[in-house]
Length: 561
Image 1 (cartoon, helix red, strand yellow):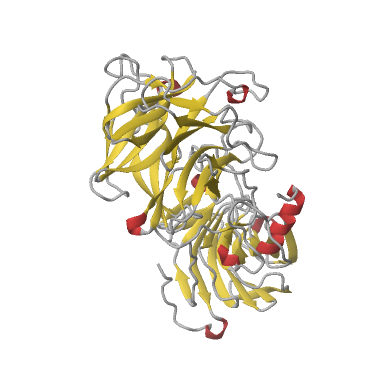
Image 2: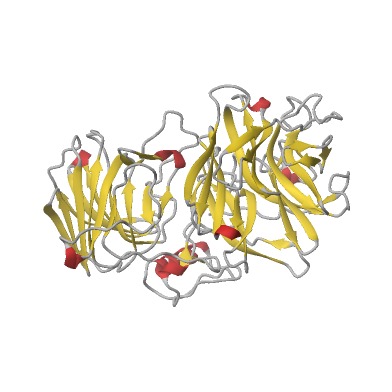
């Protein structure tokens, strides 16, 4: 049984934010009121599109792969499936040429003794998209890499004659052979997307002409228009296995609309590259609902201990046509007959138990983070990837780049990836970069259940607002903001201001440049992590210090890494 949406949200908030009891039913592992807050998480876990993640067991980590601003590729390393982790740029597009723009859907694969990243690129004109591959120089997935391509994705005997538009390439290994599978046009300039397959001669070269796997309009639900009109469109193929059965999920419909969804194929022939080798299921396999929509471009991975299967996909941020998307992860399983079962999409904020074997750090005090230079380790970022900049001058949140790609504001925040002691004194330098009309910037604390969204966290926020000359204190319950106190302050946004927060039981004190400016009492939240946050603004943070209350003058030590 699934609760109605409004009841499910209330149960979720009650459990995550530390009051009430009950459970939210979902899939195979459901959190209960007796679980620790550390054992639960909520979606969306991050911003992005076309997610790809694999488990790197020898190094006890997950490796995520994403396009960065459509001009680079990053590999993220994370010890948790519920965190995108810390990114490292492994390849940047040149300033001009056939691989200079529109870098889409990179996938990281380990084949033989190397790492390979398959991706699509163009010269800025979509009709020129082709498939390329990066090959690692050694055994390190974080680079360096060498570029190969374009791969031969045409109809000729040589796989070219001419080469034809291709995106979303993935790799199938079957019966001792390798195959490339991708979404391509049937001919140059047609804008009609089908799924294609070709054998691979090596990880960087295809071995013959392509074969169309299936038609793209066998069913009305594959069409780009919600009422079955428009045209058929198949893309984003992904392999999923169970026992000796091989399946292929694909995304269909219009990626820019809420009706985007998954279909499913099964390999029924001996040769995956033979005509008629794949059978299409007559119904869509994973569809959105009123709360989570535009679902697609899935991939599949195991939990840290290997006991669970997890489904990773993107969903639309809003119902307007466009490509502003976020990442969801949720458990899945297989039917007794062997087919994958994905269930229904998880709603943003819905309570889920962490993947089996996933742990969360706990931090002791004191801690110090300079926030200068590279992005600090041990922090999770929730916001559009282009609205965060780590520089030698400090950590900037909310700064809009010159060329934003599908960007959106969401109350950008960085949250330490584990709880700190309940009582503490914290201070941070905030530079509003001279903007007199800036809105909020400040500290989150006693924070749990962080996700993408303005108020998508449970806990407290203490902030400064230059445009109204205020210090504010309030709480968020995962959905809404409640102001608890405010005070006028002498705030100069042209200088660096030091905000301080002291939490002692239910007593909260705010200070500005060493002077107490606000005191309040509230006991809604008792424990959690700490973070940095902006609201429809940009600010630079430096010199974050967190002390135990009994050691205001104690010597700081470096934060654990």
